[in-house]
Image 1: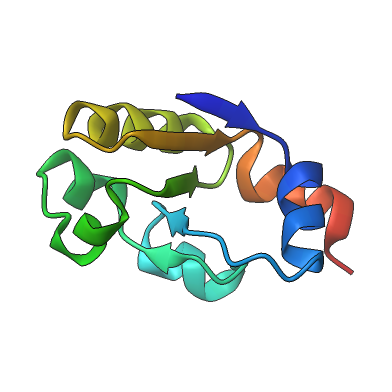
Image 2: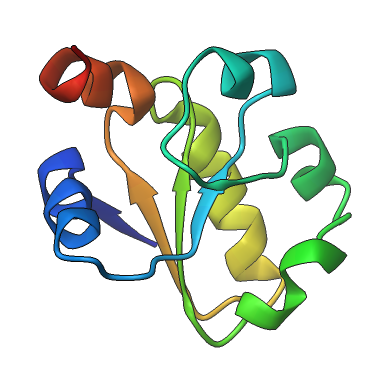
Length: 102
């Protein structure tokens, strides 16, 4: 697992790059604020209910949560499930909102 910063991801999104963003928060958190990632709560990932993202196994997957802790857990589980290029968004949505939310 590699850590990435909100600045790096924001720049890539602003450049129009299509990213496999994986929001591992709960649905109510995603409803409050999100950056367009696929919602798959960490509890489902821990239970290996990951059929929705199976086709990402050989692609870059960027996990994020509120602060960066759950996304680390999710990234480690995904790596153990055979995902080859998993990244963690350091600081999560708290960091994102502190820099970019208006």
